[in-house]
Length: 537
Image (cartoon, rainbow, N blue to C red; front, side, top):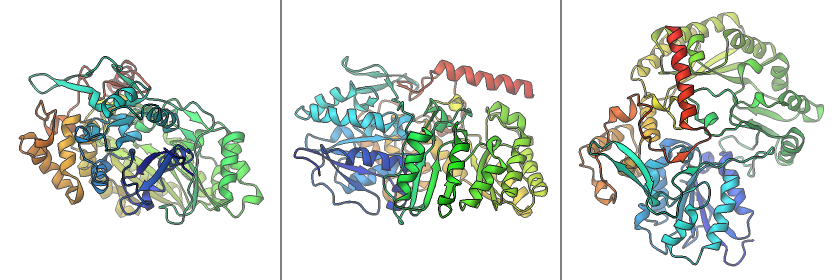
């Protein structure tokens, strides 16, 4: 039970309960708060929530997808909390956010947030809560300055973006000497990772106990936010982490999900599968996220089949080996075919492959190579259903490909793959090219996008309305601009933000936020890919 004086907290998720409760990250933060006696935390989703506090001290949001950004404003409105951070007074809660989207580039949403937690919540939440209690008697402005002095805590209102006469961002600087010039993302250093704290039949994955096997990925594909932003690669201890976590889940359910960017690269993954293949686990159902193709074996496929798996997922990105080298996808064609054969021979019914179009340096020949690879797989490996999940390359902060834009030809290439593969009985699941543009807009923008996001709240959040609102803001004719206190420069063009390749000398909107790797290291990696491209051509 919360103690007297506990911080009254709302922890929100920008989607329905069914989706939100399936998020392991949300569950971990919820549990971290709920286990403290000095916090009284209530959950909030777009369709339901716990009984809310009348006057909360804290309002938090976990954001894992750019396109959910406008929903933050809908949730704040439901709680009668002013949307712009500068309009909140002493009686309003501190609005804080975290998650991969806000850790990568919080700037488009910065004017709505009092605090951003950069990095792993297991590290940040305890320090944040302690600081809130220690400084609870301070005025709001003084409290924010104290919070900004804690590693990994970013207070946007204390930093000012500066533009030149052409509207080009030239710096993001602190506006008081009491806070750091830059903020570093915080990283959990532990050999025990997270697992589910809530198991419910109402989740998107009903009654599943999720266990985090690894965090980050050692392969470092040059476009991948999930690997670069969460470095270093960490794996949960088999004896102290994974086995106890699975056993705990089995008290409540027979469904176990193994999660991670590349679960099969856990150094003891084979040992984990052998342990799960014991007779005492014959009645459980096992599922796992994407595995590295080169690690798929006949033994792995058999164990997965024995534990109720029907398919396995691998990421190939492209059928072109030359392009895979450029993006640092350490994968040869033989390994893809071996993974498919092992899956089929092990009894699995399906193989899902993740691919991408619009990658830097990609040509139509590379698209044809992807089509050719899938068709040869279908012809060569009998008895397995092939599904290609295909998305458009979107630049992400803190990755070597952050300087590349979205390629307009990607839209035609999505259609070309569908035209080649669908008639041959290969399922195609393409992501929307149009929504990929909005994703890029949010992932690459600075604070000047905030009024556009504000215009998208409620029922306005459609692809067409995004384009209309951005056009209006570009012409300085958007209603929401009248509430923006820092409007000092015109928006860059839609083309510049979404499609242009940026100079490595450009000041990036997230330049004051330090990821795991320095810009110099990212540039070196980028130059390596350019060198490989010159060899390709």
